[in-house]
Image (cartoon, helix red, strand yellow):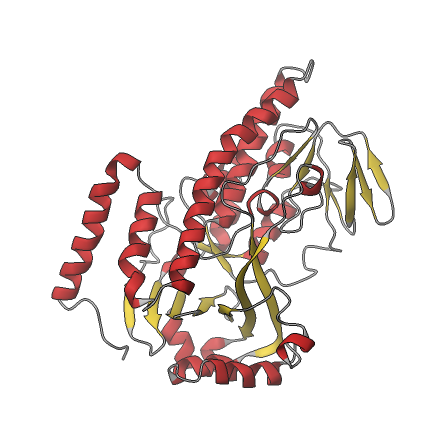
Length: 407
């Protein structure tokens, strides 16, 4: 996104990518872009038409259930509404394709795996070293090599590990699950466990089974006692770990195909920041890696790109002389820190709610809704927001809105 925004202003930019192409690997599940963040960035990047072509407005359906498939909350969407006030879904791979294809030829240098930053003006890759940059921007993810040039602080294991599974052609191979998801997402939970099922644009379902683990390398055979990339072995283990869950969720494991993808979730400390260094900065997961449980990661990352592009463009228009660019980048970082701290704090709180609260998910629905509502409103309105959420839930239950079980 940053490269796209800068290229629109004819600013020379090179993207060094460790992977061999934008189709090198699966990108995971679906993303929802929000009005004031992700969608705003897409519009300013002049990619709204391309985005709208692939966005799924019917994908906004979300349901929260317990492990017995009792529905706790559901929010639907009318797929005829296609306006910027919605939160449309788009596959990660499709979003990456849109952004990559929007760049001038030669902008992306594939197959460049970064080893470290030399000083603050050179990038050392496995097979070459590149010099002469006005600014190095690390958007290189959780284990960012660029971040290491700014700080010694590393992401911490959250205690949560997950499997990513895939159910192809779900409408035909798993019709009950397809109906359950309703072209959107279902999040089922129990204390210490969470099962996410998301509709993908190609008709498949992307599944994440998240639960508490002791170490970040829990998936190593010597730690878990089985091959965590073998579907038959993983299926057997998951049936045991989710033994008392509803049969429809066991169907997730039975209908999955392909190779499971185990991973651990890490997060930088809430309030993380770094000392400004001339010529280098970081954005996205490199700056604020977090768990996915607030649904804000992609949106804050796209906002990073938008705000940094504005600082760079403004500096370029002034001629880049006498530290103009450096001052602009430093000002961007200072404005970024409180913004990303707010998102990271919400994420940490929600992660704790889902995985460490007795009686979850039933016991946390009001709290979770209140956190999300407070996040989007000024602090002065927070008492009213809290009262409003609790009142709404009370009357919803009184009037029978809380269905005890799905049909």
